[in-house]
Image 1 (cartoon, rainbow, N blue to C red):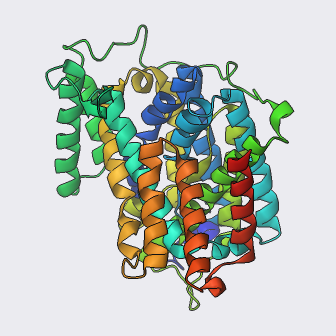
Image 2: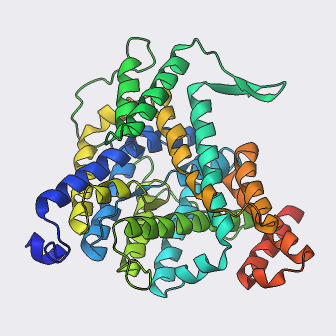
Length: 430
C-alpha cells in the first residue's frame, strides 16, 4: 500500500530508505522542540504548553505535507518567525502574546486563501530578490545575537550598549562548550549535530546547576494546551500595528517556505523541465494549514524546514519520508519533561549555528550593484541593531525604492513595492 500511494518504485526508492530519511530529518530539526518553547516563553506563555503546541503543529503540518503533497519536506514553527513573535511584537512593540497569536492565526487564514487562488507566487515574485536573500541573512544575525544574549555570552552594557559577559560563569561555559561541540559535529557531518549539541550541553549543565532535572518521569502524558489554546485578541485586528506585524509574518514565511521548497527540490533532482516544484500548491497548503492550526494550538508561524535537505540527502524522495518525521514528532509529545528541562545555555548553540545557516543567501547578493546591495546591507544590519526583524525589512524596502527612484531606475520597482512603502511611511509619520 505504501509503495502504491507514495509511488516508491516510480521514484526509485523503497520503504527502508524513506523511513531512515525521515528519521534523519527529525534528528536535524528536533532541536525546535527545545528552542521554540524557550523563545516563546519569554513572552510569559506557558513553556510546557508551548512544547505540546510545537510538537503537535509540526505533526499536523508535516502529516499534510506527507499525505496531500507527498513530498519529503518537514514543517514546524519557524526559527526567526518565533523570534519576531517574542522579541519584536511582544517584548519590543509591547503587545500581548495573544495579539501576536491573533496575527499568526490571520496569517494562516490569508495563506490558505492566497494559496487557493495562486496569489502567493505572484506576491513572492513582486519583491526584489536581493531583499529576499537579505531577510534570511538578517534574521540569521538576529537569531545568533539572541542566542548569545540568552546564554550570557553577550550582555547589556550602559557604556557601549552591548559587551562581553562573565566568561567564567557556568552558563557561559556550558554555552561555549555546546557551540564548539556542535560546530565540530557539523564539520564531521554527524547527523543530528544540533540536537546532539543541545543534549550534550544540557547534560553537562547538571553538575553546575545550570540544568535542573525534571520531577517525576521522563515519559509522561503531553502537557495541557489550555494556557495557550485559542487565546486570540480580535479587538486589535484593524490597527496599523496589526497590519505591519501581519505583513512581516506573511513576508518572511513566504520567502522561507518557497526558498526551501525550491532549494531542497533542486538538490533532490525533483524540479521539472521548467524548474518548478512538483505539487507546489499542495506543499504551500501544508504550511498554510500548519500555521492556521499552530495558532489555534498556541505557537508561532509554521514553515517548511531547510533541514529537510538532510533527509533528502539520505535518499528521501516521497511523502513517506515526511510521514516518518511526522510520526516521530507525535511520539515526542510523550517526552515533554526531557525537552522542557533544557536550559537557555544549552539552546544557545543551536540558535547561533542556525543563525549561521541562515547567512548563506548573502552569497547570492550582487554587491557591485549598489542600488540593490546597499538596501540589502541595511536590511541585514538593521535587524540585530534595532532588535527587530520588522524594522530591518522596513528600512531595506524604503532604501531600495528611494535609491531606485533617485538613480532613475523606476522600472525595477513593482506596484506592490510602492504600496508597501507608502504604508511604511504612514507608519513612521503616525
